[in-house]
Amino acid sequence: MVSEAVVKSLKLTALSLRYDLVEMMGIGTAGHLGGSASLAELMAVLYFYKMRGGGTPFDKDKLRDPDRDRLVLSKGHAALIQYAALCEKGCFPREELKKVKQLDGLLQGHPDLTIPGVEAVTGSLGQGLSIGLGMALALRLDKSPARVYVIMGDGEQSEGQLWEASMAAANFKVDNLTAFIDWNKVQATGTTAETFNNPDLDKKWRAFGWEVFTVPGHDPEKIIGAIESSEKVKGRPSIIILDTIKGKGFSFAEGKAAYHNGVLDEARFNQALQELEAAKAGV
Ligand SMILES: Cc1ncc(C[n+]2csc(CCOP(=O)(O)OP(=O)(O)O)c2C)c(N)n1
Image (cartoon, rainbow, N blue to C red; front, side):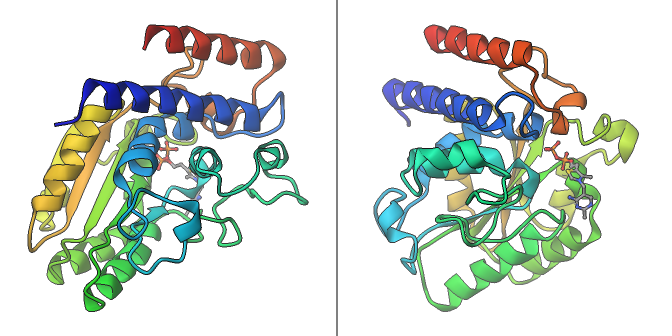
């Protein structure tokens, strides 16, 4: 059972991550608001509550600890929200946020191993689950208590490779792996249903031998509950389908493909900051 105080602090953390996201995007500078904002609560839960760096909470000084939990952001285009979390954890200086996606900056458009805290190079959709599965198998061989988390998109579910990894993970009875689907129902140019309709994801994953949970994806308490349930599942991998809103937290972007990769003009930039302030007051 998570205390009210912890839940409140995670909600505030998610807002801070959204704030960092807007700072990185700047005015007309960088895109990918939608699929980043939909992950803010999950990132807050993972980096600020759940992930361990060799026995203690995620720690920038334990990034090479063999027993650290691993996070693979398979939907690598949402890198900005991961960068926000890593920055808040002190993995690199805040000034880097201003140089995101610039040639002389540390933080490139997709996660890269030069960035402290990033565990896998991603961006070509469909590959992260295979990478995470390899990590999970290696950790099992090493008898490590660490867990692997892999975050995928719902549009990404049309990639064939992840279904191979899905079958392999069930075949190998991997139970130190928890995957997530950011079920925000929108992808790059339209809704997921109209772009590549892939219904009944829960039934599909269950049929592939996984334990499946579906939870409201902007509720830290529910996310924690599902992760903790997944930790108790033995002999098969788990997947948590997060029912989310693309662009969550920014009224002009919610549910809109235009803000998949669209940049913010000055008016939207200011509106975004105002909406975050208002949300903070309501937590
Ligand atoms: C293999 C591959 N094909 C196409 C792309 C281009 N692309 C980037 S994001 C995206 C849409 C992804 O949709 P979804 O997985 O739902 O992500 P989210 O809406 O959560 O951001 C596409 C097609 C890519 N990165 N990799």
